[in-house]
Image: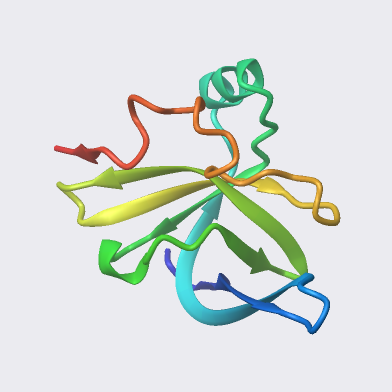
Length: 122
């Protein structure tokens, strides 16, 4: 069930004396259920340039507060899609593995899942 722990990360941005952006992440741990990516999800995401590698389901949708990054077992992920399930009061995060800072998040790719993202499902 929901016995794995993921760390949801929120970015904080500061600037140094030269005006360069310095980004740091603050994390908080929540319980989640990791799962693979369904083939239709994978192919739909691939059309928009994403490569989803894992999904995480949180049992309580109130635990997700819009974070765009997370870590699980020492691997960093970008959240590329969010599916809300009103019947189960849960949220599913579709994620793509990050390698360095070159993987865009859902904010960077507004075209993917535009109609379905952040939609409450009943």
